[in-house]
Image (cartoon, rainbow, N blue to C red; front, side, top):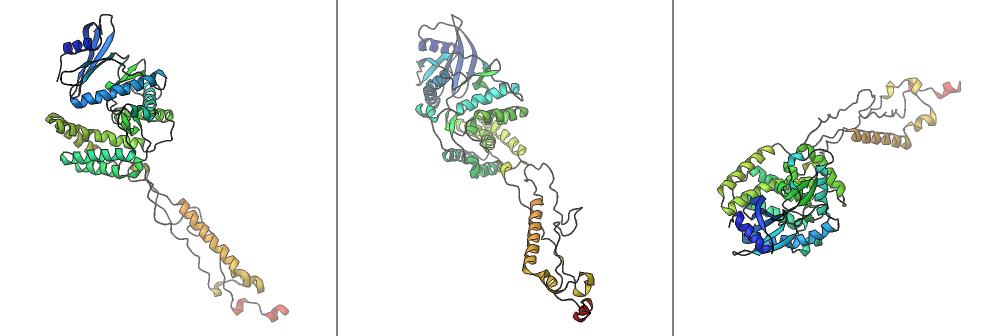
Length: 426
């Protein structure tokens, strides 16, 4: 049911005894779930009334009211750096449910184009989101809101993909991309945190270059923190993303979640599937058509991109390096006389110790070759072309790996190269 602004103003005076409304003012918005209107009283103070339009929205609003009580305490103790709505009164609705009235919060809706590289609003927004994620899970639990572990959260997303697939409106390339990400166990190793669940520019108020308040906690739960970064990953100016990521990471106390932004990418893409499902469930053909067009555009945009999470894949290994060349021992008749040795010294030239030393040199050369073999980058985002491995390196002599090979001379030499014993006696 959609009410006029005057009807909502009348409800507000019922919710807050003594409230004298003299005018309506922004914000004024109507969605499929809520109707919101700003009010001005005789004392010049601003108020906001918010009324659910469906039973499901009414139930969600009751959960939000319970959470706002918890969050107000976190704001007052300084654990949250922004304000939240503080309900002052409620008005029963004829169709069921309640409208909520609260004092207007300081600030205006965020403009994404104002997010710039470096410190300032960009970093402040990241820290505000991180502060909410740092809250204890019990804040959400005490409000009776959902709590999901990584596996149950992943299964919910997989169910959404399956439902979207059944509509026949999602390109097969996107379905394959999403299913691959949902089956990649690396992405789903995260610590669940409190999550806002519906962050958007209209739910973030800014004042004097900082986040002053956050609205719309009806979808809050414990789950994947990437969900609160997805809207920025998809819509914020590209040159601000590094500053957002860095400021967020510095404000979190737990270790780095390497897959955080990959999951944020997935969540931002799945938002289009949820928009499609919203249109299907409500029977709004314009929403369905809009979602189909956006899904086709997304499929084209990611056609040449790698799989979600592929940037963390280990680079593929090249084939084993070529074995070092072995220098064949020269034929006995080719050995000059001045290289021939007599007696024990010559006989020991090919003993086990020297052979072990030669083998060790060969193995060391193979290790050196393996260590210097060039490994190509992944197929997803090649940055520089990999240099092909060569059998020889310029400027180095000997075998392929640069190792000097020992010469194993024959154990016996021809008679004409060996001094006779009797000649030695003479």
